[in-house]
Image (cartoon, rainbow, N blue to C red):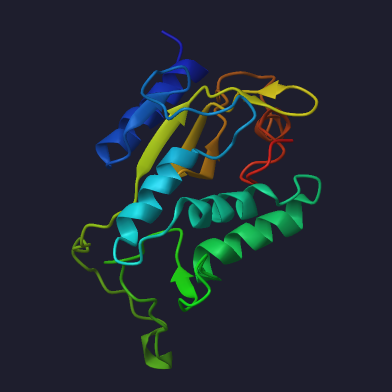
Length: 204
């Protein structure tokens, strides 16, 4: 029995589901409503922002302004757009409130609560290997969604990545599976077949 690309895809989906990343097919009615050209899962992002900032009472216009900022990044300039998205996700940003009498609000697109602080080893630790138990991460408020075979319409053609890992509606990881037993499969094939604008929010 051959281990096909479809079986590889299902094996990875099953493995990730066991790690807490629920799977949704791209044609499933359980997927949030979206336009064919949308890369973002906007409802997931709206839900995350509303859930994480209940006291601040973000308005619809404020949430829409965040979404528009992400969508406005040009797919043509892939490198710089990805750098900007990375900075927004890692550093967060200040949101100027719709009500100008309110202070600017610091927003994070990912809930990093419970993750251990980055550790910089001392010189005497550099050659030491320390075995540690499983980290006890506290629960976060992120919305994880693993989406397979999601059609995304671009300017030139429709692309269908094998699997996209979304966190809070943001497409952070793209999987393209190639069988190791196919002689014609090369290391460049996933790059050539995957959306050129991923994980940039705008479709290519």
